[in-house]
Image (tube, rainbow, N blue to C red; front, side, top):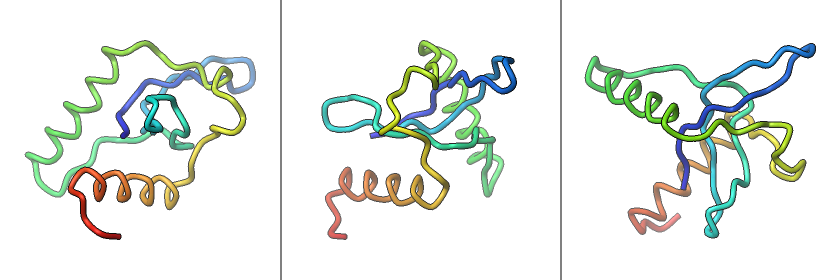
Length: 97
């Protein structure tokens, strides 16, 4: 499972906030998040609206502090994030890999 969450990071002693994809294990614990903040995207205006709506939902959850996420759960790079997202989608549709 995954969702968008606001993640606070520190850069040169300055707090920065961005929306990241956050991935959870079966127990609902964070196991990874994307290294870079995401941005709205869509291949149509409707897809862009949906993307922005999902991003806006991140503001309704508590901010995650990257410094408090254990080292074993460090950010994913984009290919890893896509693989995790694809696996989650397949599980939800119960498709064979």
